[in-house]
Length: 356
Ligand SMILES: [Zn+2]
Ligand SMILES: [Zn+2]
Image (cartoon, rainbow, N blue to C red):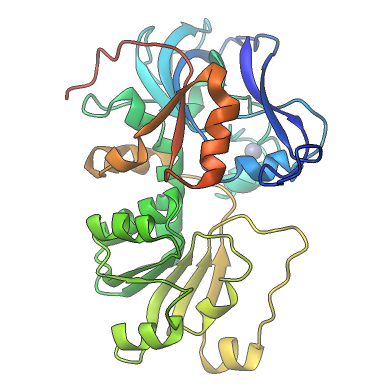
């Protein structure tokens, strides 16, 4: 089965062709269809900001490493006992690349994200088909196209970010980083009653995109003083909720200074293994009572992500589409930052369910 994979470990941004990481399309063995499994013919599979980290060997260095966890498609086969979610052959679906076993101690204590068997069904989805446990699969609403549906997983991350903010209607909110997660979090925070909604982002096109989707203010951290602008926007009080969706080690420290007294700061990205951020406990935790948190994956968020998906504006996140065989070029475009999101078309599937 044709599958997109990391075929050589290394940074995809490395200018030296000899040491640069490499993406290829290789043949992987078919995934087994267990009795409770669903085989999905993949329509679209999006490139994630985490994929270049995988190319650098973040989760291991044995190549080839199959990629793809943001996907949509059509049900092609069902195991003989895969009937509890009411799925039928031909259904348009998306889902969670992780299966929570439901039986281990974390799963039984409401913390699925720490499931001890979480990787069992983590199969590469930038492929012709993917086979998941039925508990991972969700039928798409009629009004959501297959192309939009591949954004269910990143939307679930934005929902989980919102969960961790404990936002109250009227809270002032700043988001650092205008990539897909930052842009989706912006739309979700607006739904949650965010005010003074601000995007901090060095790329002008991404700031403009955020303004089209409800950002009231934007800050260019390269040419402007982030602290001064934050003070102007919030009457000197700072933001009640600050979200990092940039993963930039240069950006993260300054977010503590634009947070208001009692604010919540979410570090909602992947950071380099060896990166450590200095933190003055007296200033930020004692005097300012900040709550600092992060997130790993998005437990309990998929059903709600499915509910809001029809209400999000996804047009600008679905404009760059490449065929599966052109994956190396698609990754080069992703790394260039030319588009906020790059998507692979894994099969040519006529989207019969979507209501335009
Ligand atoms: Zn992702
Ligand atoms: Zn578990």
